[in-house]
Length: 365
Image 1: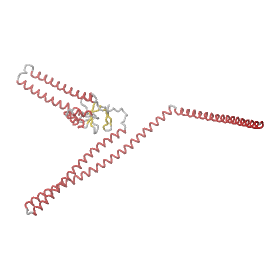
Image 2: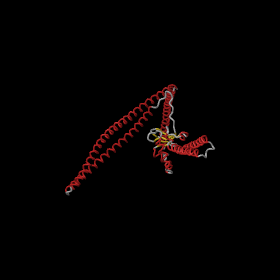
Image 3: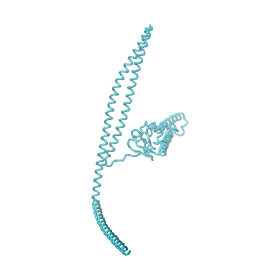
Image 4: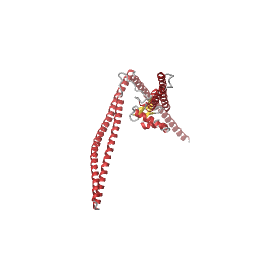
């Protein structure tokens, strides 16, 4: 089973077959609701007009009205069921709820909205391309790509028992993730404001260029003796000068706004950095406390199960074994020394006999 990490939390991706089953369940339920509606309208028609009055003009007109109502209601039912059903509170339509599936947004890990659900299902009209995208790593259809969503197995939040508190490390991690998301949104807004400032600047510079151009034309017309044309050129120049002043004013105002937003973004970035540093310090302290508690518990367990006594006995046995080994080594050295002395004495005696024998042979000769 493939998994994916969204907003710091790990989820299991829903299988392709299970997702198809959920879609079939939704279609079957919508079709069943439409059938029940048709049956109810038929019963209402029978109760209102009776079997014998179906041929009258009044009954035909009323039945036609009921049929139009049923047709329009069916269209609304199918549109809502196919395009918006997954936008409920937990990103679960009826089929996905029965099969424990959920549609989540990739950017923040929250359930998809009605807008996201509409984008997902509307792209289903682009078959077979929509299903071809389904073979990707994240098992996203083309609609999931558009809506930036993914279908995962639903994991209900565990109910905390009385006295149970959430892990502080997880609380800090979630807070940091939330701050990162808000910082990214703020950066996008600042970038958009910078884009507006650039548009005002370009418009101002273009108006200045146009004013200069009409100024040059007025000079040329005046040199040619055409004061009428020079007058018209000067009017055009004045229009662009006024327009340039307007753009300049708007540019200056937008520049101030961008500067304020940039300062605010920088301040937010500093706060983000401080929060990350404090998070690392807090996590380290929390883990140190956990480690100390764990070591104390281990020490108590060691003292309780008399492990120290076992270690002391092992140390005593090892000392006795070392003493015996040393004594054995000393005895062996003494034995070796005596053996060498005996061998040396034997060698000396043999050398003396050989000497006497050589002297005897010399005398005999």
